[in-house]
Each structure stands twice: as structure tokens, then as C-alpha cells.
Image (cartoon, rainbow, N blue to C red; front, side):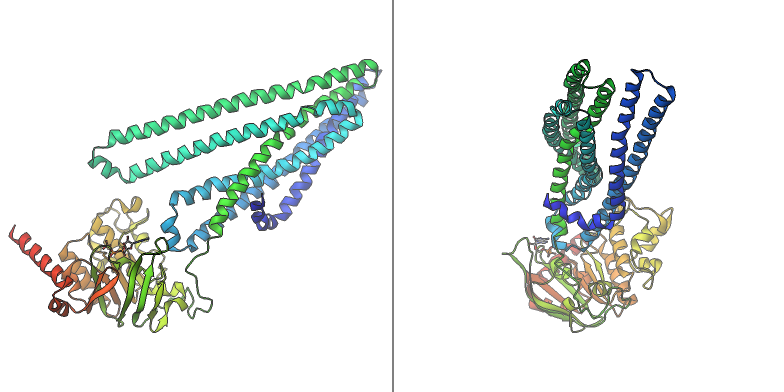
Length: 585
Ligand SMILES: Nc1ncnc2c1ncn2[C@@H]1O[C@H](COP(=O)(O)OP(=O)(O)OP(=O)(O)O)[C@@H](O)[C@H]1O
């Protein structure tokens, strides 16, 4: 329950609507409970010699009070339910904004399905608490209070009879609610499994086709779907049975009232009008009594959901903006100067006993081109991920123009660096918007950037050119086109440091060389850090670093490394041989 205290700031923000809503709850219950009194009085008048206008007056008052109760109930819903939607909206925005601040290492260990489920199912549970939960709790309280006072004023004994089944009714609703909740949770898990399966199948449809797995995948889906169907039927059966029992119990709870009331009428201690009034109160109380159990479930569910959301909200970003950052995040001017690694070491938080980088030191002068080569898993991507602070070194420091990047504005660093990661990602948007991703102008324009990345001619052949919509993850582009679109995107800010992490592996050797030549010509002042397995590209760099098992094993120019006769020379020989063989065949 105390988890729900985290909602205080949100409730406080909408305090006026909530307070007015609560006043309306009191009013609606007052009118609802007062109305039957006029009904009872009108019925009692009919048993005696009566004046028509008096009965009409009572009936009119009954209608008026009922109408006022309806109007105020409408206001309650408008104020409290609408407030719950506002808070849900604010919470969703805060949740998404918080996710944006979390570090890369958080996403290494938390699945996207998990985060989506917290942002949807858990938030729905909290909205149910803020809307119906709060509304029915207060409503039940005042309905019980007013109705019991009215009933006691007529007959304390009859009130006792009327309320006898109430605790049992609430308890059985609560118990059935727990079982319904359990069943719904299983259905939700099942639904998540179906969603995952469909999502994976659609994104991996080519693999499914290539391996002839269509039938197998279909039968997997059918099995899950059957399970989902069976569980839903079971839930439907429980709900239907439960509603029938509830209706019967509510009707049965009238029996003691009518029985004891009937005896009272015969003895002349109570009037027929009073009994009619009582019957209305008992019927009126059945839903609030039922809702005690229901609301208890809603509160428990919301408390658990808020606990899960708090786990995310309490996760602090590991990489934070330094409080005295010399440059602001929105600076348009990229930082310039040498890039330096000073005895840098790095260990992934998920594998603290396994250092991935050790004692890495090097300097790249402004405008120089540095290549990083090394066997797969030697730490190349990890090394370049440290430059835009996707992770922070565990030891040592990285500087740009002599300043430790940890003391600089993160926004300014990332604006300085054009980063093309190994696994490219494109959004379901136009090619133009994908390339122009957040640049807000001021850098190289889309056409020029795509020319440098040698994508321009390909795009010109598309029917809608740069306005061509891309499918999910850029599915309608070839692997090489996707990579070149990502390079064009990285050029948007006219970066002073360009990091290419195996960014041209899907284009042929000649195209890779042409793109690299284009970069050298068009961006002569840009420092380039390039990871590539192709000697034909890295040989033109000012300096080449060979990584082995997270350490610099060799470093120098192409010629120096050939002379060394170690890993780099070996790689060179192998690639030369491959080229000769392919030239012969
Ligand atoms: N997010 C991560 N969490 C934990 N370990 C990781 C993570 N990413 C990479 N590693 C590990 O760090 C080591 C270096 O990986 P890295 O991706 O930097 O190598 P690489 O040289 O770029 O390889 P490749 O040439 O195959 O891309 C590997 O052993 C890998 O398993």
C-alpha cells in the first residue's frame, strides 16, 4: 500500500478537481439517499384519505432529488475519472522521459517487452486505482454512512437484518476477485507470449522461409492461441457464474427485510412506506457493499504495479550531466581538438570480473584518421562506445582538446561526434527524416550527406526519392543502402569526430574505398576513428591500432605494421591471397 504514496505529487497537482469531485460524491449520495424518503411518504399517503397535490409534491421531490443525484454523479465521473486520465497521461510522459535518461548498461540487462508491459499494463492498473478505485472508495463510504443513518432512523432492527449478509457479500467478491485476477494474469502472460512469437516471426520471416519452418511456426502459434482461448473461456465462465451468484445474493438479502418488515407492519410498528424505502436502500447498498471487495483488489493490484514502476523510476542514470559542464547541451558548435585515451580500462557492469579493455592509450590529432583492427570480440566496438559516453571507462580517462569528457556537457560531446554503430537502425519514416534525424539544420544538408555516403544515386531511383517511406528497421533497403543511410545521418551535424564501427561491411571493397575517399575529401578537418576488417581501407589511415584481448597489441602506420610481421601483417597476407584467388576465378 505504501507504494501508492509515490502518487502524492500527481494527486496534489489535480487537487482542485479531486476536491470538487469528492464534494460531488457527498452530494450525489445525499440526494440518492434522501430521494426514497419522499417515495416512502408518498406510498404512506396512499393508505389514508389523501390529497392528490400532496402525493404529486412528494413524487416531484423524489424525481428532483433523483435527478440531482444523477447530475452530481455525472460531475463525479467527469472530475475523478478525467483526473485519473490526466494523471495516467502525466505518468506515461514521465515514464518515457525517464527511460530516455537511462544508461546503455540498463538496456543491456532489461528487456524491451518488460519495459513496454510496465508502461502499459502497470499504468492501466494505476489508472484503475486513481479513477474507479478512489471514486468507489469514497462513494461506498458516504453511501453506507448516509443510507445506514437513514435506515437506523426508520428501524434499527430492520437495519441489522438488512446488513447481515453484507460482510459475506464483500468477502466473497474479494475472494472471487483474487481468483479472477490470478486468471487474468495468466491470460496476460499468454498474450505476451503470443505477441512475442508474432513479433519475432514477422521480423524474422526471411529466416523462417529459408529454413522451411512455416508449418512448425504456425503450429507453435496455434498451440499458444488455443491455450489463450481456453483460459479466456474459463475466465468468462467464472465471471458469468459469479455475476449470477451476486444477483441472487442481493435479491436474497431482501428476504429478511421483507419478513421482519411484514411482521412490523402487521403489528403496526412500521409503515408500508417505510418498508418500500428500506427495500430501495437495501438495493442501493448492494453495489457499494460488493465494491468493497472489488476496490480492495484494485488497490492491491495498483500497489504492486506502482512497486514495479518505482523500480524503473528509482533507477538512476549512470552517465549524468556534470553539474558544472562548461558547454551547454544545446550548443551548435562541435568541440574541436585532439582525442586522447589515457590508460583506459573497461568492464561491463553485467560481467564485473571480466575486463574487456585494459591500459588503452593513444592520441588522435584533429583531422587525423585512426583505424582499429583486431579479431572478433577483441573489444573494438566497446572502445569506440566510450567516446560518445555510451559507457564510461572503469579506469583512466578520455579527453577531447585536453578536457576530460566526463566534465563536459553530454549533449555537446554527442553533437561533436558522428557515430555509426555496427548494427544499424532506421526508423519507419522517410529516408529524408531518417538522415535528417534531429539535426535541425546547421550541418551538412540531406542531399550532400547522402552524396558523400554514396547513397544519393540509389535514392534517386526510388519512386518517391528522399520521401520514400522505410518499412520497419528500414526493411525495404539493401544491407549496404542501410549502412550508407546511417553514415549520411552521422554527417548531419558536420561532426568534428566521425566514428565508423564496421559501418561499411555490407558494401563491396571498391564502394567502401570510394566512400572513404569521399569522406577524406569532403571532411578533411574531421577526425575519423574507423573499425574495419578490410586492409584496403585501413591502410590509408594515419595510424592503425591492433587490439588483442582488450589490449593494444600493435600500433603504427600500414608500412610499420607490415614490417612488424605480426597480426596485421598476417591479416594483410590473407586478404591479398583472397583477392588473388578471386581474380583468378
Ligand atoms: N553489452 C555487453 N555486455 C556484456 N558484455 C559485452 C557487451 N557487449 C560486448 N560484450 C563483450 O565484450 C567483448 C568485446 O566485445 P566487442 O563487441 O567490443 O568486440 P569487437 O571487437 O567489436 O567484436 P566484433 O569484431 O565481433 O564486432 C566480447 O567478449 C563481448 O562478449
